[in-house]
Image (spheres, rainbow, N blue to C red):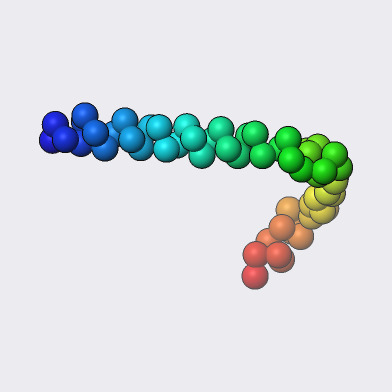
Length: 59
């Protein structure tokens, strides 16, 4: 159990940190139009008009 606590757990933490650092710093090398967040389109939700319509959809 001490081997896991002394060697494996710190190695896993270090690996996660390095992967996160590489993923974040990779944005430097992206073209300018890809470095921006993706656009979000508004999507409409169609709701039934009455409670009876709701029951017809469940069949």
